[in-house]
Length: 214
Ligand SMILES: [Mg+2]
Picture 1 (cartoon, rainbow, N blue to C red):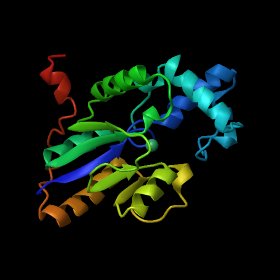
Picture 2: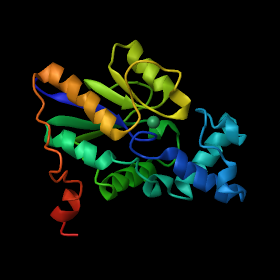
Picture 3: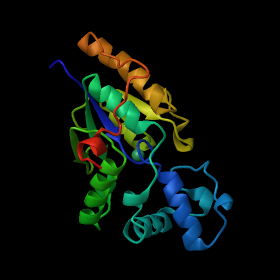
């Protein structure tokens, strides 16, 4: 198959989970935003959370604050994905947001609404349970346990840089421009060529809005 598929995670990769969760935590606890460090480990232990209290605040954030509808996007994600999509890369959104046993309808609808609002192009979307992988040539992922599980099964994973994954080696990107560079190289290796869009050409991230005459 002459196609390059990337599996793109949402939280911590396309969507800025830490920024959104931090704002909500500060509001809920009535503390200054600055008192909550952004140099967090995976379980947010630096904020005094354990697994149980993390899950409780996560639930409040998703259900009461509609975090999955309202969270900011990571810089440059829409333009980079549009350019890759235009170059023929198949974008498959992969998320583990349904790992909790509540709120599935709300989570799915807020997620697709957010993807439209932020003009994220995708050809399909997978809400995964336990299985770490879908069929993709490369993954962009931030969660240490997911990166390790994917790599253990022989998958190519680009680690999207976050404070909690810096102990992992291998392919890494700190920005969406860097993801684009790595994906271009991987795709060129697999399919033989990669039609990079010329710099300065309309990346088309507002295309959805234009098409809807918004
Ligand atoms: Mg993630």
